[in-house]
Amino acid sequence: MHLSACLAALAVTHAAGAQGFPAKPIRLVLGFPPGSTVDILARPVAQRLGESLGHPVVVDNRAGATGIIANEIVAKSPPDGYTLLSAPSSSLTSTPHVNDRLPYDALRDFVPVAQLSAFGYVLVAHPSVPAKSVRELIALARARPGGLTYGSSGTASGFHLAGELFQRLAKVTLLHVPYKGGPPGVTDLLAGRIDFMFYSLAVIQPQVRAGKLRVLAVTGRQRDPLLPDIPTIDEGGVPGFDATGWHGIFAPAGVPREIVDRLNAQVVRILAAPDVREIWTQQGMGISNATPSQLAQRMRADYEFYGKLIRDAGIKGDGS
Image 1 (cartoon, rainbow, N blue to C red):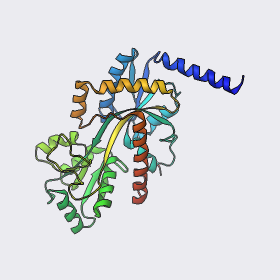
Image 2: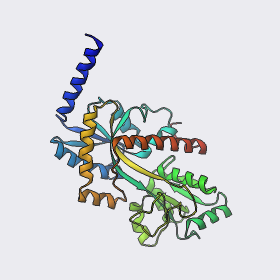
Image 3: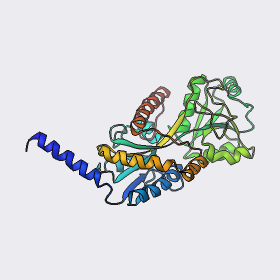
């Protein structure tokens, strides 16, 4: 058979497969446990996606190794649309730079299907810290080089990298205290054992309302609709500061475009539902209308940006 005939046959097979998709249940793999933000966002989408496609979308939690286990499962699955990944941006844009033995290539081995969310963090301090604004915090840090401590959920986490970016743009020296997850860090922050954190608003909002923690700023380019009176770090005296993230659904590279487009259209429709938007609001998340190609561009830009930040800061992970 000539090469042209082989290619034509392959194209017909792909088209037929896409037209009959799905013909069986779909697996949505998550690298994080039940109850995590990734899980909370994935489940309502999976349920509604299964209903609209006529076959269940089963959530498969494969927690561990900051998402690497789940990422590998999907990267090595057949590119037929029946195994998908739901992941936070850090899992694919910063984790690869602190682990040089990954069994996949984050940019080559996945194709974006849909962006589930867009989010920023808050810069939150213990009330004992004598700073009520970003400018005052910077002045305090310059008066105490290396004396102010900030916690994070772990090395190269989004919270850690927000702190590294803050140090570099504000030209201050801080002491980073990594924890095994966010909750232990919040516990120490509430006890005053560390000075501040970059963290998710939805998680610490009760403590903020109770006056146990003080929000100084949000980390995005624009103010957060949930905190319209809180300035951005850019407004607070650190021009150009922008530390935001996202969650997305991905498929193994090579999945037919028709399948990606069908899944994307269904997810976009699901995200427009008022009850889904309410869940996102409760989690401090925004809805994104990014197309798969736009998400691919954002992913590559974040990969390069955080790679440079990690290299410049000399950050090393367990896998380095």
